[in-house]
Length: 419
Image 1: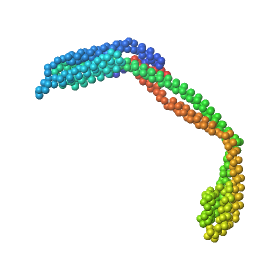
Image 2: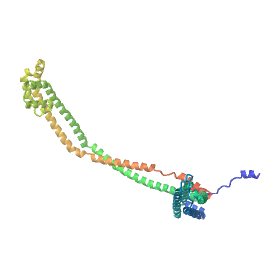
Image 3: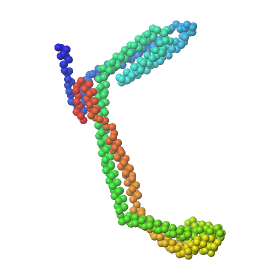
Image 4: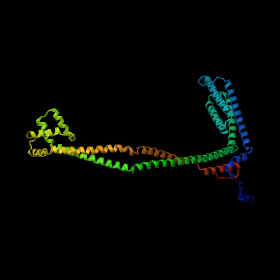
């Protein structure tokens, strides 16, 4: 019955305690009481004890260093005494240096977990040195046994120290973990407030920037919709029309020259005018538009071709065609010249008016400023986006973790009133 009673007996429930976040520091101090001082005192005793063990080992190594031994002769009668002596000196010197360095480090009173790493590293190296030196140092059997015993005692004290860290001193570790969590939560909350302020500041800048952009867009729209702007558009359209008309006149002249180019080329070949005349003829053949300025030489050339037509053009049909064209060439050229002059005058007047009007209607400065403002807006929005994506931490999860640590420290069920 007693066994069944024990089996079905409910475990005693932990008492529950509600804590405000601001009360955690005081709560930890109250829970620790004198425990922290006791643990610190124990850890200090271990530090001194470990130093004592190392100093004892150093004394044993010094004794080995001063030890004499009988000459070591191998079966093949080789004397290796010098090798043994050198090995002994190196072993003792390296070990003593290692011990002195460890003692000096422990004398500086490092953090308790640093003490663990110092003594563990020292022990492993001393142990390694001993294994390497063991064969050659057989003549010092008694000293080597003392060293082995010293290392054994040092290891025993190290194990006790580690056991203390894993059990009693774990309370300090939990306290440190609780303090770390409190600090992290506070940092997250502080960063959250800072981020909110930054975001608010950026929002204000973005609103201001958008107003500026709106003003610039409005000015550009006003210019674009003004009467002067409409007039400019009309003038630019007229300019294109003038340019097309000018191209059409050049086309007419080109067609006139093309109609008699065969006979003119025949004239150059058969009548052999001088080089200067040939150069001038080739010029208007390649660039008929020059006839719109002056056509006297062209007309003279056509007249010369006519005079030597039998020599220039053997084909009767082409002769007749040339003669029919030749009759109207002068009038056609003159007509094209008049047209071109009128078009050029209109085009020049149009260009002059446009040049005067364009600077007044230029939105280039507004557009450049708008481009700069747009880039600045993009940067501000990117910055705002980066703030939102920053790691803010999950406070709820950290608080749950903190509750578990505080519960372990106090052996109570801790519930933290969320911030």
